[in-house]
Amino acid sequence: MRATLVCAALALASAPGALAWGAAGHEIVATIAQMHLHPDVLPVLCDILHPGSSKEADSNGYPPCHLAPIAAWADRVRMTPAYRHTASWHYVGAKDDMPGESCVFPGERGWAGRRDSNVLAALGNQTYAVAGFLDGEVGLAEAADALKFLVHFAGDMHMPLHLTGRERGGNGAKVTFDGRMTNLHSVWDSFLLAQALRSIPANYSRPMLGDLEVHLRGAIYDGYVRRLMIDGFGLSLRDKDGVQVRSGEGRFGAVEEWLACPSEDEDDEDEFAEQESSVMQTVLRSVGRVLSLEGRSEVVTRNGGVRRRRHNRHTKRARGLWSWLWAGKDEERWDDDVLCPYAWARAIHELNCEFPIWPAELDKVAAAGAHSSRSVDVEGSSFEHHDCDMDGGDAAMEAAGRPPRPHPELLELDTPEYAGRVREGWVVERLLAMAGIRLAGILNGLVLGEGENDVRIH
Ligand SMILES: *[C@@H]1O[C@H](CO)[C@@H](O)[C@H](O)[C@H]1NC(C)=O
Ligand SMILES: *[C@@H]1O[C@H](CO)[C@@H](O)[C@H](O)[C@H]1NC(C)=O
View (cartoon, rainbow, N blue to C red):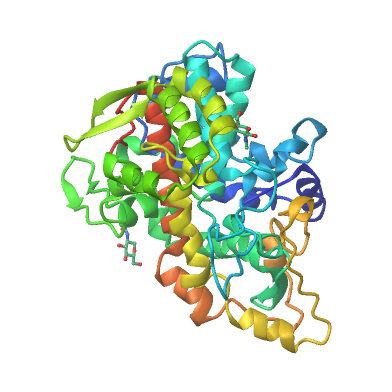
C-alpha cells in the first residue's frame, strides 16, 4: 500500500490512471472507517484537515469532507526531504523473523531498526498528537499531519508484510502473478486487490447503502466497499419504501471484538512483576507506573466492565518519561488497554507463516535458481522497505494490459492454491475491514473522549 512521489510520477508517465490502485487499499480502509464514525466525529476531523471550511453536512447529507483523499498522503511524502525520517514509520520487523520458515514477533533478539521508529510506535504517537491538539497543546499543522499519518498507518499495520523485515517485507522476493514478474509485497499491495476490484459483480455498482452512500465518491472501489458492508458487515438492505429485503448476516461476525485489547488487570501485572529479576528494573518500573497512573481514570465500558484509560493530556507527558525510564520490552510501551497496536499486529503478523502469506515454495524455488539473490538483511539502516519498484505496486493495472512474458524460474501466485485461497477466505477484505473498524474506534475515542471508542454499527 504505497505510492511514493517518484513511483507515482513513473506510474503516471507510463500508465495513466494507474496511481489510483496504489492508494486504493488505504482509501478503502478510510472509507470503511468513515462509515463507522459517530456522527459528531467527522466534522471535527474535517476541521483539522480543512480548517475554516464548512463543518456541516450539506442539505443532501453529504459530509463536509472525506478521509479517503488523505489516506495515501503518507506514502506520497515519505520520499521528500521534510518527511524522509518518516519512511520507517510504515512498517516493523523482528530481527529473527523468517516467514514462512519461522515467524517471531519479536523473538529473542528483538526488533530491527531504530528504537520506536516503526509503525506500532507511530500509531500511538500520532494518536496522542491528535489528542494533544484537541486538548489545546499541539498546533493545527502538527495535528493535520498526525491525522493523515494515523489514517495511513492503520492500513499499513493490517498489511501482514509490513510486519516482517524479511527481504524488505517481501519487496525482494520475486514472484509472478498471472505470468507477470513482480514481488510478494506488490502482490499484497496491489495485485490481489486489483483482481478483487475487477471481479466485483455488477449488482454492487448501483447505490444500495442508504444513508451510507454519501461516504462514497464515485471511486473505482465503491462496489467493493458496498460488498464489504453488505456481505461482510451484514448491513441489511431495504427497498425504496424502507422494507427490509435482505437481512444482515455478515461474514465478519462480531466486529466489536476487533476493538478489544488484552486486558491489563492486576493479576497480569503481578505475574509480570514476578518475572522481573533486576531490582533496578522494578524501581524504574514503579516510578514509571506512578507517572502513568496519575493520568488514568476509570471508565465503564459498554459491557459493564471497568476499564482504565489514560487521560490524553497526561499520557503524552507520562509516555515520554515512561519510555525513558522503562527498561522493559518495547511492546509493553506501545500498548495500553484501549489502544494496542502490538497486540493487534501480532495476530496479523502470524498470517505470514500460518496462511501462509509467505509461501514455503518460495525458498525452494530460490534455492533451486542458479542466480538466487536471496538475502536476509534486516539489520540497522539496511532495513528499508518499499523501494520504488516499477515491476509491481502501481504497475499492477498497467501490467494487466500486456501479454505476460513467461518466467518459469519464478513462483506463480495467481493459482487456486494461493490467490484462490485468499479470495475464498476473504483475507484481503477482512484485513481492510479490520483496519477500518480499528481506525474508526480510535477516532471516535479521540473526539468523544473516554470510553467512547466503540464504533457505530449499522
Ligand atoms: C514516538 O514517540 C517517542 C517518544 O516521544 C519517540 O521516542 C519515538 O521516536 C516516536 N516514534 C515515532 C515512530 O513517532
Ligand atoms: C449480487 O449477485 C450475486 C450473484 O451474482 C449474489 O450472490 C449477491 O447476493 C448479490 N448481491 C446483492 C447485494 O444483491
